[in-house]
Image (cartoon, rainbow, N blue to C red):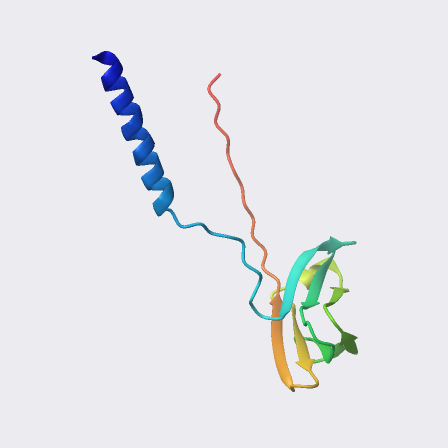
Length: 137
């Protein structure tokens, strides 16, 4: 009798597991299908911020990249062409200027063939965090 209950219970658990596994939906990693232009902060070099610009284009194209400061002074302008272009830009300046509320740059990426422009505005934000740890001795 105990053997029959044990067998029935194991079969019920197996059937329940099969039903749960059968109704789940598998998910797979998808290819990135977003914006072909990407700008991200990758860190500091010699106390100066470094940004990485990725142009994830599959066809060869020409781009005009312009970087201006908050007063619209042109810091850099370059024309690049190719496929899957990646550039790193280090923004020069002293520590006080980079942490100032007035700090800001604008990065414009223009596709010269389709005449479309992506604009990125970069500004500085300082945050101070202080934590306290209490331990019972």
